[in-house]
Length: 430
Ligand code: ADP
Image (cartoon, rainbow, N blue to C red; front, side, top):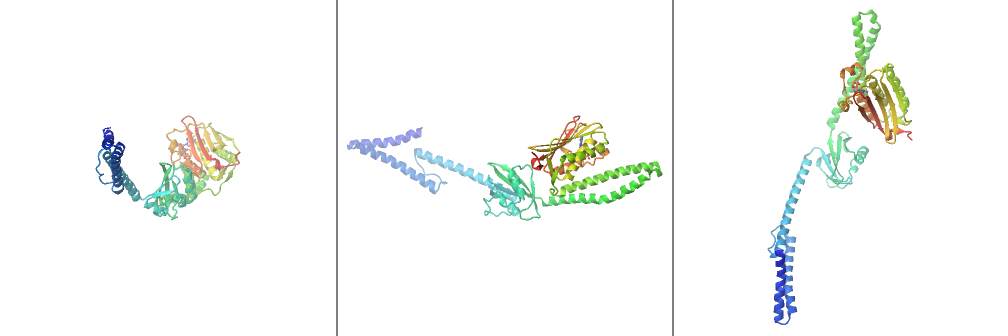
């Protein structure tokens, strides 16, 4: 406020002096005009000094000026200084971030809200074939044209990563993970997992080969054991019991080998070649017959078909999945239990369910049930002829049919295994 009153005084007194001198000479109006011109001249001079300072060397100390102008110069200088400091700090942070992203062996690509390229590190340039500057502003799908990437990118569900061959070298396998941030911008990270992929392939091939190689010796063993079993009466009783046990264990090993081979095939094949509309009612009727045979009529097994829509997929694979669920229901429920095989379809999708009113499963086990060889009660599973691979097979079959397995169960309240399929998997649904 003091600055302001001083500034007003700076205007008033030259005007007053001008008027007084003008009055003495008989021209007070001219005196006032001269006084005001002096004030205007002073302000124009300071304005010029400000202009020169800002246009020529704003980082240098401001020119000295009295009163309000001096304060204005000082504040502008301080403001500029703090802005410069903030800018430098931001620049240093940005440089550090870019440097660390540069040092990363994984690709990092920043996209704007339209999906156009904004920035990428040199790993991305190598892995995805992006050229510095030249490709800036282009859409990501101009480089990653694989339809699987395009639909993953557009679906905007990035909870799972996507694995694909590199766009510039088919032999390299990349895993993409997209993160949404800021104003709908996206960060695409790509990692070279060729080595991991090869190891995984080796593991699968190894399991498949071992299982395959074990088949022939097991067939020979079980053939001879069958012959010996036929001659059991001529053998001493101790040997007879041994042969029975050997037969049971051979069958168990054969089941294990068959399940391992099936799992390997499900993992290795891409799937989708033999997909056709399946009559679900007929499929469930066959599974029911097989389950009744396993149960030896000790369980009540019902089929409830609530839709005549067909399911598109591989009949052999789906039969194996539903059979596994139905056989489990027979094996893990006491005689007299009720088992229901259900087929439902709606606008939202379809559901193939196997329900029982047996002892149920403790919820702590449910998330791990589809792991290979995970059993709630190992002894019981082995005694009932389980291989520990049943639910893993179900999970893989469903993956190949865009489906999901959900398990609802509580101890003492039975279990419900639901295979849920999207609507696109239905044919003839009204
Ligand atoms: P297994 O060959 O041991 O049956 P699965 O993968 O088919 O292997 O099943 C894993 C485990 O899940 C089983 O060991 C069993 O404890 C449990 N389970 C599966 N189905 C049922 C069911 N209907 N009721 C209770 N427990 C079940």
